Length: 426
Image 1 (cartoon, one colour):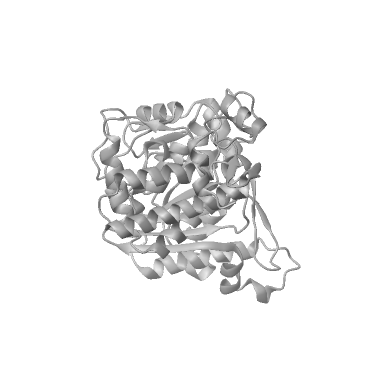
Image 2: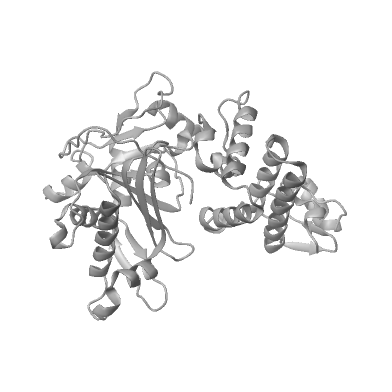
């Protein structure tokens, strides 16, 4: 299961065209004294509308067709299904509100483009029993069946077939105060998956401040239901965002300045270790450098508590590389990511026996070697000539004198530490 992006629900739903009140409260102490809510500007609302107006493909396995659906229509239809009576094919649950979360929410709020690999949607609803979660699953699969082309035989649209064809991940949690479920739609690598999270209660609401944003969608959905004119600079709904990290302004500053901040990483499944190293690989830096070594130790300890076996670590790492480095630019960061992860595990792991630590480091080195050899531009006996993401984007970049000299003379020294010949068997 991937790391949490979580919600605590408490309060009543208020939704109308001009305002969408937060239905979330946090048991965690707020970071700083700032306001955790903010009203989005016109530019942010416009970007949000563009995201929600996007037609997303939901790829099917086997000979099931790809479903194309506008995101805001998917949200509205799923919500209607959840609230419909069980006798009418619905789940019969009350939905308090719907939110955009994760990378897509950061993309909406950031001043500059923020790539995102998934579209995370949160439906807060009352799910007191496992039977209610079953009804939610049946309602979602039932709605997907209505999106099939008319020529599709109805016998193929049964719940088991729809789940096998269109659901890439399904999670249910009901323990220790957490009660929520997740249905991830989409199976095609290189395309955004749509993650539908149905939350009653959830303790941990974020990993890092930069992924703590949630944007209430109720007012935007109501706008499209009621308005006859398109969104414009003088005519758009009031949309409210929230940072569940605590201080909205501080979290937005971290996002714009590419700063890493969190608290109590030992509460995060996996400790946030993999995402922390991914942020480092993408050029983020710690907001509090004097505290980061302590946080790294907590991250490593929680990661190895949750994934103690080497096989589990391999599966988790490979899944993270596969799901979070999509596209040409992201793919190019894999080796740098693994190199940074190797360094953090080597320097900050205090909870493993010596042989266990060496096994984990060898695993990361093997994965780094695989990625390096797969993407090396030039291989000579025993060495890989290339440039890491810090130096330049290509192997022949004249801006890196060390690399240019190495390439010209087939030198015996690689230009960057992360291109150590020991990591390549060529």
